[in-house]
Length: 437
Image (cartoon, rainbow, N blue to C red; front, side, top):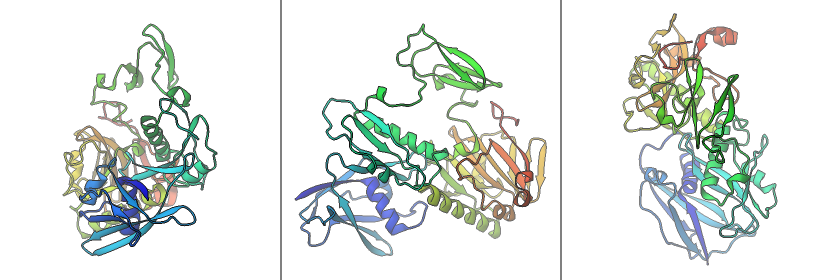
């Protein structure tokens, strides 16, 4: 008899990967069942009766089942996952491997970037003793190497955990952009749950734990030297072209740039982002918007193993998705969710026209920008003035690692032929978000 435990993110990942097969959120609740392989003598000990989406919202929940089934030659036990929807019932058999102490294993979590299920691999010390704290080796794989294979490349250590993030995929984002965030999420997850000695983790921190109020340390930002004398964590906020130190983020004016409300454009694509497409255009505009969102969802899944919440402007309200960043597709005339941008945005994307300070474009134009919105979260805009402009920006590569976009950029169709020469204007918002520079 063997007792097995599976966390809800693991089962959610299995079900989505096998039964759904396409990126995007499941719109309707589905029933699910878990059982041991038929005829194995297994019995379900605990199985929550809840819709799949409700289960996904409870990532720390787990179910346990016992089975007398015999493992195969590789030590794997069969687990049957059944998915029941309005279209019928589908089952998949998954091999569950029981790991021995010191073996590498995969662990799942819900990513704060997009709410998707991600994994990292862990190889624990040969023996974990109660009350003892261990070192941590955070190992980043090379191109084409899976995270679990990276962990398997190490022997178990006597005094350290080896943890291998995934970079979202084997190639992913080259440890830039969302690949870097994946590594930092993994680090935070491990430090919160494992007996790690924080003094034996190599990391960059703005927390001088050994400092006393009278002691000073020096930080260099944009070529300017700052002598800092304070306890605990500090925040630097950019104001009027310079940097100012504050004790906590709460001390700063929330209407200005701060660590939470900031660019550039690609930083909007995180914080359990919600993508909102417009339904207020004509048939051609609405079809082009859907095609663009589908293209981006496929690219995000293919490159970043991501699964994003996608809703229409009719369904979206800031209250329903409170605390989450928002990505808007289209323009203010075709997507009613544009009204949730903070008032006074100096860039206005409309049907057939874009205004950006002293620059005005009429006709088929594209625009990318990041700007604060309702609920003090960041909104990203994938803007287009027409259906033709949406098709023009369809293959945009902002998910490519290393591709840089400032706070805002506007361009016309010549960008397809001339590249950067087709960019009419680009730059940054002022510290109060009210003007362009």
